[in-house]
Every structure is written in structure tokens, then in C-alpha cells.
Image 1 (cartoon, rainbow, N blue to C red):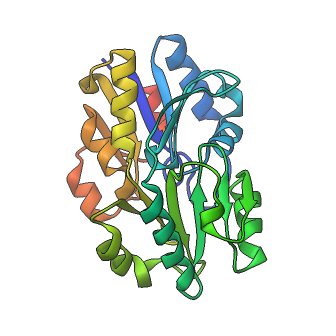
Image 2 (cartoon, one colour):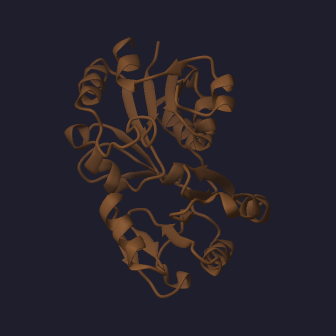
Length: 256
């Protein structure tokens, strides 16, 4: 029996060329929650962005934000259940490393705010507009006034040219996750650790948890639960790794 469901957002609940979650998803989520199942949104996105996306059920679900770096409980005020900050000095050094690369933009995440040192005004507009994130523009990453939970590099032309280099340079200190074609994220957390913390707090065995994902940064979450689902649009390596494939999350939820 499934008692908890964790679901990735971009590429999983929100498919290409979409910006909103299909209302059919909310109907199934509400039905399952009414039956006692816990639902968790699990994303690299910020808390405020996720609340906006899940507005019909925003006060009832759990949030795994910033690729697992902060876990926030249900309710109107979003109490932090757990956070996993990066060590300050290497995190700032990583920020500076990203800024040194031409064409790459930096986003460093706190618990509720993202911090930018933008080279282009288009990047600030992207973060505050398309991503619906609360963001502050700073002159220098050392000015970030709180714990750094996640550091991200963005390139509108694709992250692939530096992905291997950055992974080799920083992979010994941080978890490195390529989040789609344009982003690469660095944390000391991952979605699997966050799901484990929620299950532990709620006394739910991981064997009775399900997860949906589509990308490599979802692997820790998919590997830790008893019922992993991979989207049929995922890369072949991921499709081969998991036996249960999914075309639409709402259809799979309907069968639960």
C-alpha cells in the first residue's frame, strides 16, 4: 500500500511547452490525500514557485525544494522541517567559479529567496518571471545573508559544455545534478534524502512510498522508494533502470 507520493515537477508533472499543472492532477491528489496518502512536490524550484503551481492544494502538501536542500511542511506559513546547507566557503568559491565562465549565470538559493549576480538583465527576468521565484540581486556572492542551500549555473545555450568540467572539479564536495539542458545544480542534499526525512518523521516505511521522475537528479528519490515510476520521455538509460514507465502522472495516480 502506498502511503506517500513524491513527484518531480518539470518534465514529469509539467510536460514540454506547458507552464501549469493539469487540473486533473489536483483532482487525483485531493482524492488520495482524502484517503490518507501524503503528497510531496519534489523539485529544484523554490518554495514560492511550488506553492504557486500547487495553489489548489497548497496548504495540504509537503514541499521538497531546491533539489532536496530544504523540506517544508503543509500549512499556510510553510514551516521548515529540514534543511541541508552547503559549507559556506566552498559554496562561495563555487559561485565565483560559475561567474568566471563567459555566458553562464549564477543562482544561489536560500530557504525562501534566490540570490543572483546577473551578467544579463534577461536572467533576472527569467528567474523572477518564468520561474516565479523570489529573487534578490547582489553585487557579490559573499553578500548572501543566509545559509546557501543550492548553487546553480544556467546557460541559455545549454549547460553541456561545462557540465563534465564542473562535475569533476566540484563532485568530491557536492552532489552535482544536471537539471535539464540549461541548468546544473550543486547541493549537499538530494531528493532521496529529503523523502527519507519526511518518511522518517511521519513513520512511513520507504517501501510504502512512491515517486515519479524523469531525469538524473531524480535517481536518489526513485532509488529510495518502494514504488519508483519513470516518465516514458526519459533517456534510455533511465528507462532501462526502472521497470515502471509512466506517460501521464494523473493516470498513474488514478490507479492507486
